[in-house]
Image (cartoon, rainbow, N blue to C red; front, side):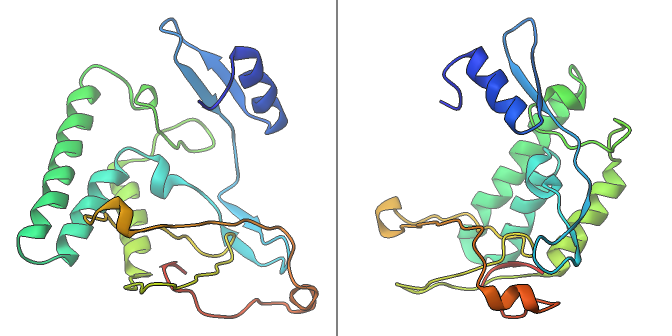
Length: 191
């Protein structure tokens, strides 16, 4: 459970500068305005910093379709089916509800929805700069969460055969603060 109650939700939203409201069905909507481009907290370099890739319903079918294009044989049928299912689901609900009522939407600063063409162009740019890596047992991946969009494809194996641990830190090595550009390789993600 994300929040204990409405008051807890209001407090946590206020801490993050989010606006939270409940509709007549008691569904919580959280809104906040964030710039697409931000300065990296260490290097000061401009970075595209937005969750439209994962927080917009129209992006999910595109991701499953991409996964299907990467897989071969019968395994590709599962992500193809998921892409088709979510495309139909969002299209059906779109007949009755505005995009903003579907639970996961990113809008322009003026509140206007992105067009399908704009979303498709963003997703194409992300996919163009995405590369995959087949991990092996005991692999460790470190990424600068501000510079690298990262994620993983669908996993079809048993959950007991995969364990992912994450750790977060805002403590950069002192040498990074002296360098104008942080360099290095990333194992998975979008540059």
